[in-house]
Image (cartoon, rainbow, N blue to C red; front, side, top):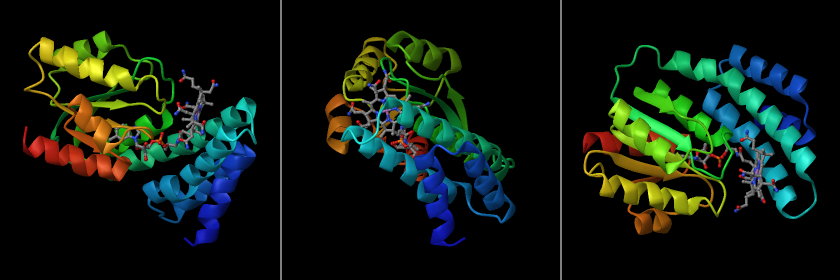
Length: 216
Ligand code: B12
């Protein structure tokens, strides 16, 4: 597919045009476009533009919500494709993933969860606005090898540190690797709170989680 296709996809998110987005995503599926390219080169560029315009006050919350709905509809259509690509893989390890308390952004976290699942990780996605207690409880209950935490907001970043501290207090930290991600999360921040890795996108997340599991 040429750049024009990905540009048109990005534009559907900017325009809040869910029908055209679904039509183009379907066309890409039929033509065998890699679902991750559809997300990263098309849909994500559109939502980033709307996010930047929201940040500078050019667009307002209703437009941001409309764009997010289109992005979500597009990624959900691709979820099935991503899952199909991983059907015959063996399970490499168990992971719990969620967006931390105070944050309801779920698109990026869900994309990462689907791509990890398709790459042989048994992923338990526990959603958004997840408390420290829920992260710890689910990690214990499922005997997860890896915990993934996401946030796109600055304030809830501290929750990631609280989860890691609680894991230490409960004697869990040695058994469970931790990977963090989301746009405000840097390598420096990950080091500061004592996470094992930071993932900058879904493909990077897969690479890093696989590496963590090798050392688990
Ligand atoms: C869509 C969106 C929304 C949607 C969310 C819909 C949904 N169902 O998720 C809606 C409209 C609801 C929304 C609400 C708000 N939003 Co908003 N939103 C965005 C926007 C435009 C895009 C986010 C997105 O989906 N990106 C696409 C995905 C694919 O990318 P991603 O999330 O970054 O994820 C990738 C990587 O980061 C990484 N990753 C992410 N998590 C993890 C985890 C792991 C383990 C790994 C390995 C990797 C990984 O991999 C992903 C795939 O590549 C961003 C701007 C931006 N450029 O990010 C603002 C943005 C994040 N929002 C912002 C704000 C301020 C808000 C609100 C507070 C607005 C308000 N006044 O109410 C509320 C939040 C309320 C709350 N308590 O959570 C600010 C945050 C500023 C800050 N630093 O705190 C941003 C940056 C916009 C801006 N420029 O001001 N938002």
